Image 1 (tube, rainbow, N blue to C red):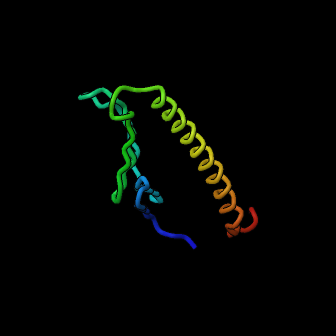
Image 2: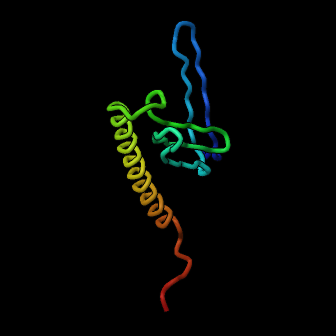
Image 3: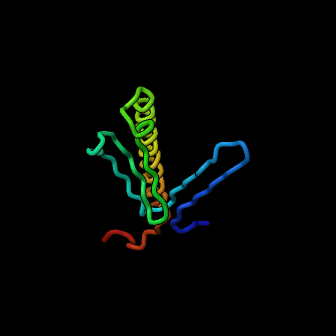
Length: 109
């Protein structure tokens, strides 16, 4: 079963617990952008679709801390892994599609 593109959002709130928001993007319409805000110099990373926006920036929207650097490195590593996995699966799926396509050209003349 193949689903169409979608964005999934959950919000969990329990007494005496920190609220939890989950955002799952499953759409080719996702935009990713990063930059530096000049009004109060700080980096940002942004994921947006028609349905949801996720913005990531420094702790307390303040100066870059050692923890911010560690998180940025984790994001970089995770993004590189995501890219590698996408490339591998795409190559495998493309090869499978070619293997499944019948040869209708017939024998060479």
